Length: 357
Ligand code: ATP
Ligand code: MG
Image 1: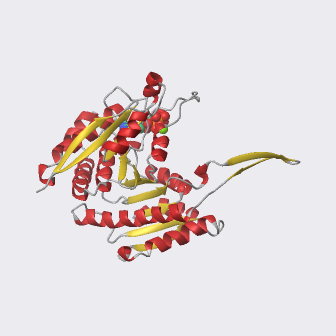
Image 2: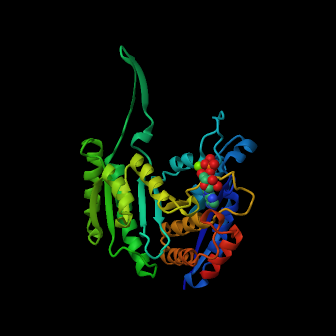
Image 3: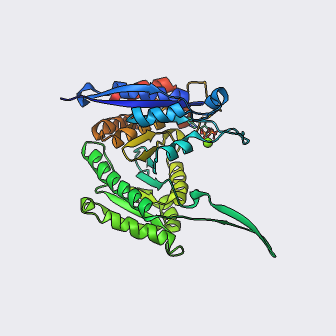
């Protein structure tokens, strides 16, 4: 069997990022040889500590190595100073721009437990436009100040994000078929919008997404749509109904934090920043200064982010193995980190999951 070598950039960043990114690396190294995968790692810098040491939160070298020399990357977390620091801005936001990582993908999955509602969804958030173009202005009127912001929606961005959602739905179906049990029977994409009020902007998102998902290769995917407010209601009442959700930037931001709250700890929720042929896995949590240095950070968000990165490198089988090992650890419930009510250290959780591969 041919071996595929993947070069992965490792960007631990600050705080617990330094404790969890090494777990992602070990996970890749521990994958069974039968998968035919080899990994090479490149250590890269970014974050507040890097800013203090070098004057740049995202050194040019980090960007150029990722662009020219990596197939994918893992990003830990970066501390954001509590008050604005001159010259400092978030490196992950800059990375998304520089590498055109136009999608933020966030799977949210609950632990299978008897009687509890099961959740197994992924939110696919457009990441380049909508209100985040940050074109705002304030002006004076006789009645006082007025502020305005531009909400920009383009056919191009809406089409590519909907296409990605369709592809994710198909891939999730493949991963289920590869033995990762799920509550869903077939691929489903729900388009989220508010086109009853914003008929032009959200209207364009809706119609473009519909059109993209009508492509022949998505013929097995069921496509639904839902107005964002009623979506929030249903997300809390009936979260098991969702498989893949696709949304413009702002709704996606709100829905993905809301959905993450449904499954307990931030330490469980992964994400990926995805562009054309490149993906950065990133746990949803921050640098967690309150627990850093204690060896108790939950590594699962990072391990799942690592699997998600593998999915976007078309290694579904490897990803399915990781998801199953994590699920088995959580279902058994013996080695859990403190955020989940257990007493296990990061290292013990990592070892338990690697053993299950
Ligand atoms: P930042 O500014 O870097 O986002 P923060 O203070 O907002 O830092 P978060 O990392 O966002 O902290 O975490 C919020 C809370 O969740 C903290 O109490 C933190 O300890 C907890 N938490 C976050 N990630 C994990 C994890 N992987 N394991 C355990 N607890 C975590
Ligand atoms: Mg935070």
